[in-house]
Image 1 (cartoon, rainbow, N blue to C red):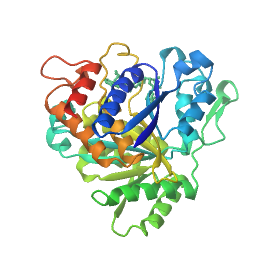
Image 2: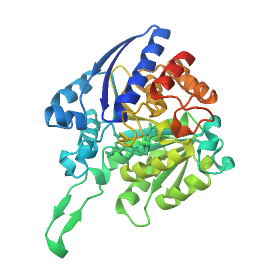
Image 3: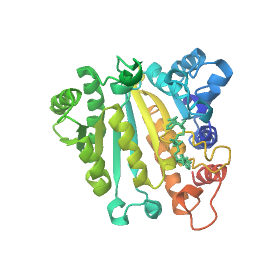
Image 4: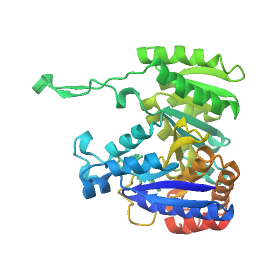
Length: 360
Ligand code: NAD
C-alpha cells in the first residue's frame, strides 16, 4: 500500500515528538512492505512567523491532498497575549474545520507498567480502558454571536453554544459504532438539567440508539461524569460529548494514563470513496514550552497517534496492533521519559523513539 501522509510538526515539543512518530511510521511500513510518502507543512506559531498566517492556504491544500495528516502541537509563548484570531491555536481550529473532522477519539488506557505514575490509587485505575469521543466541529468554540463588546462595567464577553440535530446524530453514530466493536456500552454526557443544547443532544442520542439495539446507552451529567472518571473509571467504555465538555474531560483522562504525554488522539470526518476515514492524528498534549528543545518530551502519545492513523485511515489493523504492542513492551521495559518517573535514568525523546522501532 502507498500511504500519502502530511506531517505538521508545529511548535515546541510538537517538532520533537513528530520526528519520533515519523520514524516509527517508516519502520512499521518497512516491516509490512508499504511505501510511505511524507510531505511536511506549516501550522501554528512557526507558520505565523514564516507566512503571517497560522494556517496558510498551502497547508490547507496539502491536507486535502493527503490520505491522512499527522500533527504535533501548536502554541508559542510569544503569542500568549495575542487575540484569538492571531494565535497559533487558530491553525488548529482551521485544519480541523478544513478537513471536516467532527469526532475526536481519545483512547485512555491504564497500562500496567504505569499504574504507579497515576496520582490515583492503583485499584481505582487498574483495568481502565475507555474512549472519549468529543464532538469537534461545533458547539461554543465555533458558535456565533461571539466577541467582546461595550465598555467599562458594561463590557461584555459573549460565546454561543449551538448544535444542530445533524451534528449531534453523526457523532453519536460514530460513538455507537465504536461501542459496538468494544464492550457495547455508550455513555452520553450532557448538562440537560440546564442547557437546551444538551436537551436536544439527549433526545437525538436516544433516537440514534434505536439503530444500535446491541449497545446499552446511559446518560450522565457532565459534572457527575467529571467525578466518576476519577472515582470509578472502569465503569466507562465509550463516552460521547459536545466539544467543550470533551476538551475538559479528556484532560482528566490524562491523569488515568499516568502522563498527558501518553495520550494519542484521532480526529475523524466522513468516509472517502475508498472506504478510509478522513483523519487528523495528534497527541493530546500541547507544545509544552517548559520542556521544548530539551529532548525530554514523551513521544508515546504521538506514536500512539500513528497506530490510530494506520487503523482508521488505512484500515491496517495488524500494523496498528504491532505499534501498540511495541509501545507496551517499551513501557514494560521501563524505557521511558522523565514524565513517567522511571526507576532508572530517564530516556530522551529520541531514545524512546528508537526503543519503539527496535520493539516493532
Ligand atoms: P501542554 O500540554 O503543552 O503542557 C502541560 C504540561 O504537561 C507541561 O508541564 C508539559 O511539560 C507537560 N507535557 C505535555 N506534553 C508532554 C510530553 N509529551 N512529555 C512530557 N511532558 C509533557 O499544555 P499547556 O502548557 O497548557 O499549553 C502550552 C501551549 O500548547 C499553549 O500555547 C497551548 O495553547 C498549546 N496547546 C496546544 C494543543 C494542541 O496543539 N493540540 C493542545 C493543548 C495546548
